[in-house]
Length: 160
Image 1 (tube, rainbow, N blue to C red):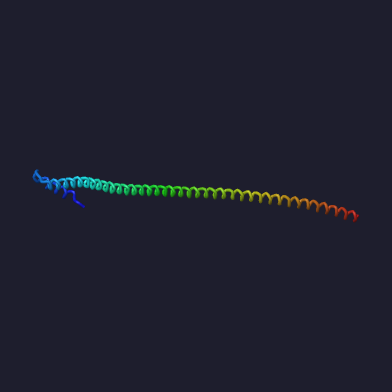
Image 2: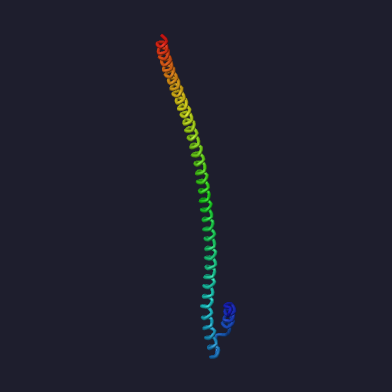
């Protein structure tokens, strides 16, 4: 590839030569001028390529920065979601423990009420049974007494 600086130096050397030139020199000068014109657009193209490459590198850096930033944001969002999930879990466990304690307390209270009711029912049943036994014994005594009296009356009549 032709270095634009070398070309420019060659062109300067040629322009320093005398103004009166033979036909071959005019032809050479025209050729040099054409090369200079060709070199200038090449230099401009190279400059544009350098700028484009620099812009590409800058864009690549920007893309990397954006990806890194996005990755950090996603990581932050994940951490926040994880923290919220942990908090929700802890609250759920605490709520479940409170519900269990309350249910156990209610069950214990219901057990004590049922036990007291069973004791009361037992005592009432025993009382009724004792009363029924007392009444049955009294009736049996009355029947026995009447029977003994009748027997004595019958026996006493026969003896007389």
